Image (cartoon, rainbow, N blue to C red):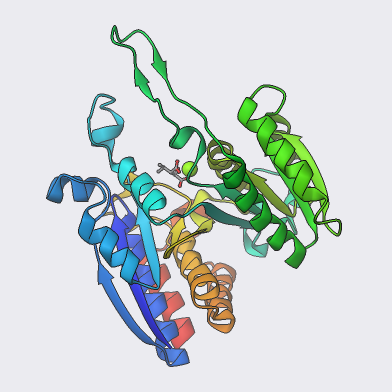
Length: 355
Ligand code: IPM
Ligand code: MG
């Protein structure tokens, strides 16, 4: 197969972790006989510096003409500490999600036997946890308008907006995943307070009738936040709005043992994007210490979702499992053992695949 990939390393640790995921991707293509064509483009703070725009038109064109996008991370302390900056790196990520129509962000939460002890949660709670959080990605507070400040600067506002159509398409997608898994769907909202959440629940209740084989459950987001750590094995597929999904998936990453382990796939109308759920970790940038596994596992999702190549995805996961079992890991999961460099972990996995 001919695989055309847009590579968007972004900021902070982005370039280092994407470089490793790319090496892994090349090794897989070599092993399975695929032709790989990849082109790099700018996004985030580095794109603001170079082009004054966090998601330049050339980057968008490259994404549109590619079969998949491999994305690193964006964000820079320069902007985090300057709330009055007019252009922000995160706008690049949001523009990309909106322009590519990436309405669904799929974040699988699984455990790795050799990392069970790394979770701050009790091993018996975590062992065997396996769920999928489907986060709506192009609506809600992230995109609702008006957003801004009053003229006197004393008031600020964001707007949460959802249409029936937006909710239906994501909930249907969630049902399609639930049908392929353990047939259980949890719809997370705050319907006791928010009008948008009441619409989510209304749409959920209507669709639930169309999927009688799936057990549908509704949870308020505060309760869901508690149950994720209290009883992670309770969940199979969870679907929720943009902001709740952002927060709950960072929380869910502690089940895995490190934020550096969770991959994601953003899918929708145009080219799909594969990215770790963590941010740009600027304190570690350039130090070759960041965990590349979330990005490498995102490459696995890319083979699976964008190209329908299951064996290739499995080969990556198997190599990652092997690296964990052999304790070839970065400092965040080394737990007192030897901490390997980002590039050493990537090289070990690449060689394992090639062997
Ligand atoms: C994520 C990130 C982004 C988000 C940031 C970097 C804008 O936290 O993908 O979860 O909030 O969506
Ligand atoms: Mg987040």
